[in-house]
Length: 308
Picture 1 (cartoon, rainbow, N blue to C red):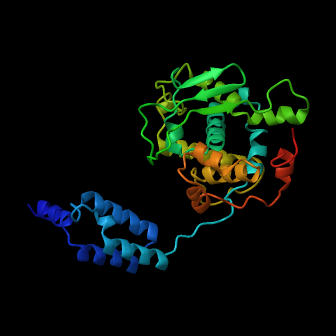
Picture 2: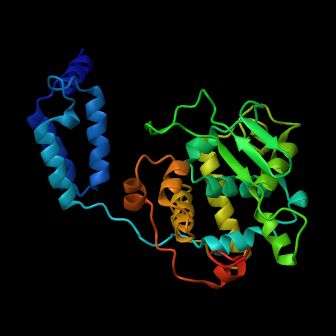
């Protein structure tokens, strides 16, 4: 009975008690984003105030505005890792020759390339399927990935989840050795080989399946797919004799990829459509990074160069 009374108390707490609780969180030094999570959890359980949820109550809104000023959300404006260097590493050993690498390396590379060229959330990528209704290879030059009809995106927007069309990158015949090397970064090539290599043991229509012996062929969780993306970046750094940056996150691929796309002249509207951001504000406020500083790898890869 005590548990029931406690639940009822939480569901019907007056706004003064809620504000006192939120203030206590701030007094503990918690970040604004953490306080928002607590408020969201309360809003789910609470009966609300009239036709408004807890988060919509005028006093709560005013409190959260003040909390944001006290605990401003800060983010780094520079990439946490070097995309040109990572791409250069992906085109060489231990990621190539792709037909001869172990399945773990093929899985890592394919997952990272898909994350980069799509600018999608890991949850969106995890929902991709090899079902013929969702994946169609159109000749040797492109592949069409349609959203799984059963997938519910993390953030529902007015924008429909559009199909992802991947084009071959520097396909044969090659006009130079450099173009042949750049073809090793082709997502269509990696995806086709990954699907072929996993066909005999996969136990799920989900695109990415486990290569580990204990779970071989079973669908991959979002957490494990995130580990693959981060693992590919770490492996790229280590293959160049460099220490990988601390705190790498798979979600960083969205900001890194979209910022490089903007730097190379892709309209922000197209970037937002690809990433399924409702407005450019989301991109500029939370994902846009300064990628203008040139690097040696930048020149080698031709990122932003005059390569045809």
